Amino acid sequence: MDFMADQLVDGRRLRLLTVVDVCTRECLAIDVGRALRSEDVVRVLAKLAAARGAPRRIFCDNGSEFQSRLVDLWAYTQKVQLEFSRPGKPTDNAHIESFNGSLRDECLNVHWFTSLADAKEKLNAWRIDYNESRPHKALNDRTPREYSVEMANQGQEFSG
Image (cartoon, rainbow, N blue to C red; front, side, top):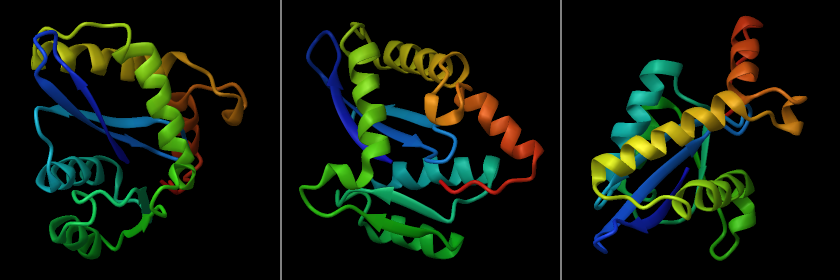
């Protein structure tokens, strides 16, 4: 998981929390808000854990939102290991950095967001397209959704 920043057409700031499953390459969430905090990280993670089960580990950077007591407590109670990248080493979490680059190039740099609701709508549409319409070579030319369904049908455990 990672944070990104963008803005509305009127210059007001937006923050995005992106969450990607490393195993399936599926974008699990793009949470959008004016300011996102550790409470928002926990809300998104709890929602994902309720829907899919908690992951064994989560890769993230050293941002204060990820190092907060609230996120640490959530991870502890869910038996999730938080793995932090080394300061100044974004390649430690290359999957999310690559995903965020695609999101920036294909969505954030292409659309003007007139409101928070407009940003949420456009980002969610892009997320669905990314998961359902874009095959990945690392997944044997299957989409993240196809691969995720295949793994679930085989009873595989997610590693994300």
